[in-house]
Length: 397
Image 1: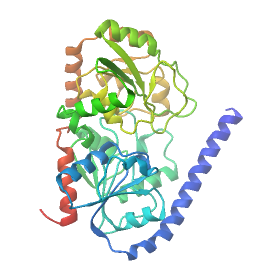
Image 2: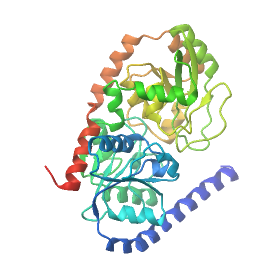
Image 3: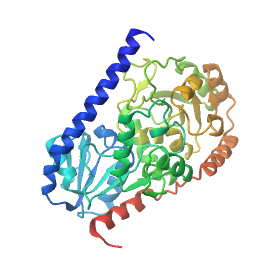
Image 4: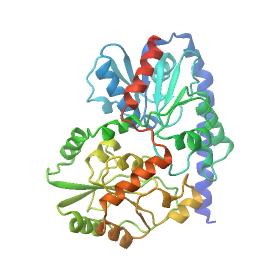
């Protein structure tokens, strides 16, 4: 092992330790906030630790604003409150993540909704209710306790903390419930097998507004077709052959016709390095679901976005030149050859799969994939979980 790599690992462990110790101190200090009463109509949201207004919490939030006008006070925890500029409602407030106001709002909210682990530092009060929507469907890359090499005391304590401070977990499939929520997340509580709220618009075929929004944002003409390249997060040191976007676009034009543009979206935990000039960077676009709605083709790898996109019926291909290394380092919930998507280890293979695309065979494989995992996606997830929030706040049956 090189000295640089050894230092990287040591530095990462030190940062994790400092973060954990800081959290412990904050938990002690913040308990003083428990003298304030809980406000029964206050609902607190966060996505990806305050990065954006997006994902499942956003879908629930927007449904509640539309269907329960004036009944709730909505709090969004964000790193940048500009994210809420599109929501001009008097009962919607942004608070900065880990600010004093955040701790106060967290301590006094009746319901908390998150998508990436429990809210930090503050334990759940007895009369509070927390929903973990998770941020991925299907059963692809491992998570939680199942990640290879992740069973350190710090990580296991984090999993235990999340499990103890969660009231309900949302699940996209029966397989996800048993193999991910129960085993990997170590959660023994109530699981709602409603599907992902963010997928409701896809299941109901109501994507047009999202598509128009993305096209307007990037200045795309209405006759333009979009291929979205969205790889998942990889640990430092994973080196593999980069995708040849130019060759992919040539293949797409030959097979499907039309003018094509590529949007490239990196994982929220991943690299932010400058991408090729031949593609449009969508890494900073706040809502992945809107990008999926706007895309005619998705190219990904082990990301759960392939689960969401599989319900559109549009082509999805996996570019996985590092699959052997990824399985060795991270691990997969299920063998990649059972997912139903074309698996391509080289750019040549990727382009050949596009050139010989069989839409009917692909849709049949997707139906089999959904059935194999026991899909719970019905298009009603947002409605069902919002009703549960209403019931919890106002104790109505």
